Length: 602
Image (cartoon, rainbow, N blue to C red):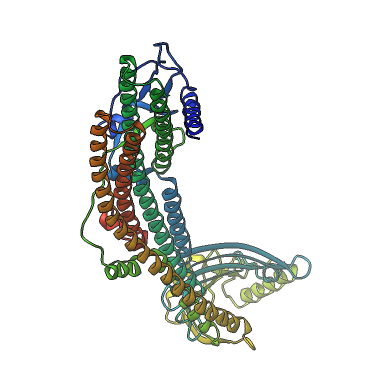
């Protein structure tokens, strides 16, 4: 029975040896242990195994070189540098920043409703009555109007001018005994202001002010979203940074373990050559070496995966040359023995969390809608007023009307009879010349300039006051909008409670994770120190021939695992610290980052 067990064990060892030797051949190299993370980035490890008779066997390549990365000149990277690069080049942050800029343009566009508006309307009108008779009017109306942001009123300053020609009246004048040498045009000018003021509905708030107030809150929400995205990105950078620190330190441990196995292989081969050990022992060492080389390859792959994740957060362009560089973190895990107070962390979170700020702004938007819709249920009563100066004139370029120019046959016969009588009585004869007779009153005669001058006469001012009352029967639209806003108010309150519960849960978990990581560091450090003592004792027993290579390998692997557990606990502590900063929204304060709010300019 013992022979069967021994035979089975030998077969297992031989099979493992065959697997270990079934790798690619490379050149031989002396074992080398990397002293720090930078050495890992620059060096690799390779081994060439020899058979018992001295001939080359299949070799194993354990180089730490990675695909698509130039490790000759690694790029040192501190955590602050990584955060700065993320703030400058992270695409998610840029997208969120552009959302803020877009909301700024939306707010400015709504504020444009209060810009003064200049309107000029020139119009020519010709009306026909019968035949060729009618009027010809030319008007130039202009005004400057503006809505006022306070009170909901609006004003309009107008300046209107009209020139009217009555073709029928002109025809009557020119076809009679008196020929009009001027024109029969009428000029009118008006300068004034109109003002409308809501007295009930739209007094405290109207649709324009509602939309602007909501847009301001939307801008603040987009700013809160930007800050939350930035904090989450920074937290992600911190965690991936520490993951890269762990991956490189794990790679360093795996490489040291591989080099230790190589040294064991070198020693066992020397013993075999000296006849102090059986050739079968070499197979056991080669099997362990192959296993450790596999772990090194996997750790190297993990370095690439984590480094690529970090580059995705830091590099803006997918074609950047920085993708070809390797990162070498310069930070080491820092442990703070002071415990974190749960109450202080909870207070920071409930005060700073931008998700809660967004919901608070949702509540303010809902309050604005409630106020507006409640206002719309009131009747509309608007005060209307106007004041204007009116100027009027009539006439043309001759500055008067002309009469006594007789042209028809009857008029000339009458005119000659008068002169005959005046001759008999020895009176001065009258001439058939035009006589200018100014209109009455004289200030009405003239053209456009006269109408402008008449604007400022004492009798020119006009004014009017009045009210407009409007109230829809039922007013269902406003009432239902108000009911909907009240439902949203209850919904937002429920969402706020739910979000606060999520914040409480995240803070409690983060504080617990940080405290656990700190305690893990202590236990892992104790395990690593004892594993070192055990390995040192086992090495002495092995050198004395009192133990086996199998137990020695177990001690070496135990030490490697203990080292990884320690560095994992250290990096997990720093990751938990970054996560606590995230859940309490204290990332900006801790990392001395200042974010200027765009809402400060509006």
